[in-house]
Structure formats: structure tokens, C-alpha cells
Amino acid sequence: MTSYKEIYAMKEPISHILKAAAGLPKNKQAEFLQSHPKSQLLASFLQLAVNKNIKWLLPEGEPPYKPAQHAEWGILYQESRRMYLFLEGGHPTLKNRQREKIFIEVLESVHPDDAKLLILLKDQKLPEGLDEKQVIKAFPGIDGK
Image (cartoon, rainbow, N blue to C red; front, side, top):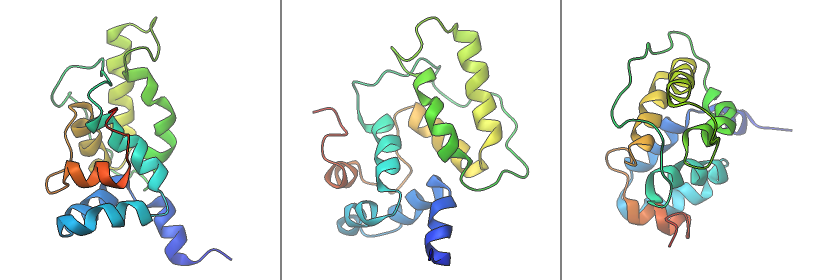
């Protein structure tokens, strides 16, 4: 039987998981990230920030969007399958205007904290307090080296 803690962890916004990691001492961050039930998905998202071989096809900065008022936790997990649309080589025939529109739709559908996180990742930045060396230690190879 799935425990309440496991159910909570399945839907907890990625931004909250990373905020919790960032609040830990640096020498504990890698272990926390590795041990999280969603560690593989976390690695996929963190790779978007730390792997300089990944090229985003969106302008830097915050686009004009309206944060979701009543977004359920965990929507970003569902939206993760569309991340390829925003990356070089992901959908070569998609026009920039359409790509930007889809990105804004994603931002408006996810938890507001996850939207802010997604903008950081797009700009290849990590949340404040999260150490890049610890992220790479937790998930070797995500930096593309």
C-alpha cells in the first residue's frame, strides 16, 4: 500500500523539492536529490540547466504570462514530455512564435513556483542556494561532460 508520504512526494512540485535541497548544507544536497522518489525526473529537469550542450530556443528572461491561480501540484510532471519542443533539435519545423506560445501555455498551467523554476532552467540557472557541483555529483553526466 502506498503511504501518504509517497503520494505527497509523487505530486510535490519540483520547485518545492529543489527548494528543500537548496536549504540543506551543500554537502547534503546531492544525497537528498539522489534519494528523492522522483530523482530521475529531477535529473532530467536539472540537466536542462547544467548541460551547456543543451540549447534552448526561447528568449532569455521572463515571458509575459499569468501565473496559474489554482494549478494542482504535479502538473509539471505531465508537462515534462513537452520540454523537447523548446530545445534545439526537438521539433525543427515549429515556428518560434508557436514555440513561445506553447511555453507560455505551460507556464500558465503549472504551479506558480514551478513556472518560476522553469524560467530559471530555460535560462540555464539553478534555484538560489542549489549548488551546481552537488547537482552534478547527484547525477553524474547530466552536465554533458
